[in-house]
Image (cartoon, rainbow, N blue to C red; front, side, top):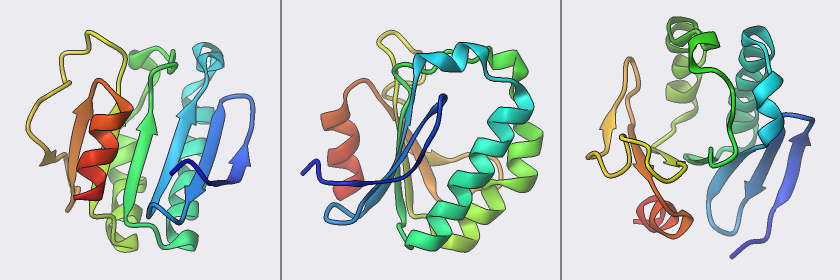
Length: 134
């Protein structure tokens, strides 16, 4: 189903609660080409709060339009400040829908860094949602 409620939305993307399907979604916009590292970190903090407040244990990140320079991401900060919040909220599965040609697509689901839940990468929304619903 595609019913959902926008938890928050700004120029970078939308956080959508899909209670009937049991997951929380990030839908990134192509405007992320201009997002700074600090703005990205703030966004992830808001999203972690939304996971805790909605009680969703499954996450879909639609990164097909995500344009941020990977070098501007602080993965150590994410591992120290965001992943523990996901763990504490009881996240069970984390799926990324990626643009075509991304090397991570199809790798076996596995925990990343300090995560206690598996993360998987998919080339289509259908595949990601199928895995999330198992």
